[in-house]
Length: 392
Image (tube, rainbow, N blue to C red; front, side, top):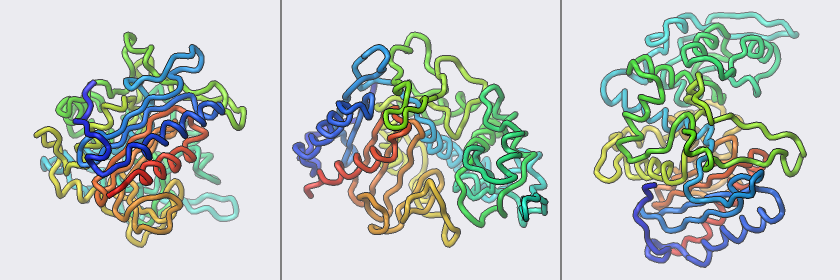
């Protein structure tokens, strides 16, 4: 497990006492039964200043949480896949302005759904979906669980989210579905990054997991981020409670003990805190870590810029945030109901993981847990605790 260089908190302008509140607060919440356990890391100026592993790794066997625990990171897969797309652009193998039909011909003639009085009709889209649309979630596609009306019925009938299919199969299913709006006109969180994963496969000729390992993970010294966990490491997988501690509803997470057919670029990866922190350090460092260049500085700047402009956003974007190429981007210091800086960027995972990078404060932080129902609360709580520790 390869962590970052370390520093005492005060050496990088952080208060050790205030950082200590993170473990205190998490310990209290774990004691109340709201969270099984967590790993939290805080870095500033490229050095790791705080790390804690607290609570239980697996509630069913009362195993203690460890810093090398393996988590389902769900949508925190998206920034990694988006990075691969940006690398292909830097290599001259694609353009962000390219229609996705360049790589997946089945998307050549997109239609937009128009619903009126419960009746669904289709019209030609104003233009094709581009690679940039997929990166910033302005494609017009949807997730089945958030779709509404007649489109939801079509998504359910197409069974888009099934795991027993390849990335090519998923793309083919999505190509049969109409868009919710003309591409580029609004933000809607969707299967867009799954399609980016398929584009990586088409351009490289490799399965997505192989391409990500070759292009990003291995060069960064990231060895335990993948679409499944090998049998010898199953004992390190972090697990949620069987039932949500607040609603009592059954908690369902993906089985990561067997290699899946679907290597979901939008949500299929597992990772450790050390692995993901190295990825964040590369992004925060302008595309380079330990002398290894993954992306150029201008590509990183493009990724962390707001690409929505006047296009309206919607959940899961918080108030005050736009979206870049793989990350939500804070537009101003105000509006959002959590601490942060203008230009800070972040993303999270459905099972409880989250990170953010704050260039203005030279800060990045990572929270890893498997508590789906409590994820929004702990994202904000962790942020506030970290920002409160700044002393310069």
